[in-house]
Length: 352
Image 1: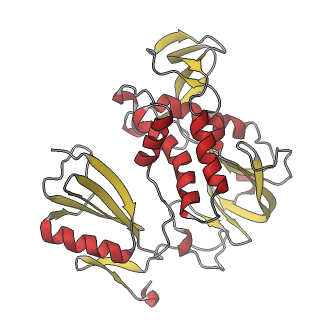
Image 2: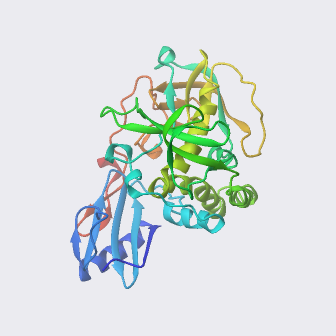
Image 3: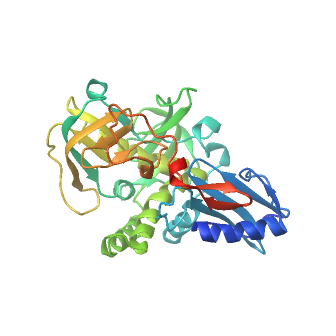
């Protein structure tokens, strides 16, 4: 038997300890994540990753993955991808495509890849720069026409302005030559759908207004941001063609802005050595100046002199105030909890 409901819930260390006591008392605990094919059958699944610690088990008809952070940072996430997608489908029931197209690219699925680019010329040096962030990049892309996947997919020559096609190209960020899905608007394509006026407009309008009207730092604001972003991520499991359309439009916009003064950029932000002529404002698809000052970067990782550090796969809480990306070693641990004796126990700071 499977389960009728499944959720993710972010909890404190104290709450996690209570779940651990219950799981070890009534279940066989397996020290790994649950696979998609497995049923619970009186099993609980415990996964101890670098920062997050999770426990998954089923109680009655309710199955849940409980997650806490070992570095004691507050967890802001108020909604997961599944819940965000369910909210999206209340506005438009997304047509689900054959599951052979779904999943990660290196697992055989057709997956779009957000842009992640840096200028090697200035890498590893401090530069005076301006950092721009795009307001709700995914939401802006969702307002434009999307593929109508309720009709059968076809292959052939794309009817320009009426249809959208997709092609598989090699992903330069992957060593295993995995492909990524990129939208195209003319020429031949194996995957073609007609374009239709976006059915997501009401969804975007409602949840963007909720985000803007909520108090800064509130759970309502965090949830609204999560619903707008995570729903797009979850589309990979249900309809990678619509997701690729959204991601592709964001990538195309950023690529159009790259020049010799660009330092680095990603799906919704760009950092340049010069001021850019961009529409500044608070509306969807408008820009805000997030930083102005000195910045340094190594690959996709960066640090602003005002204190912000972003290093892929390394929590921000691990970096000390005087850390310098251009000369210091990347921290390998910053947690204050570890799994011991069937519970999470606090360990001494001086042992870190």
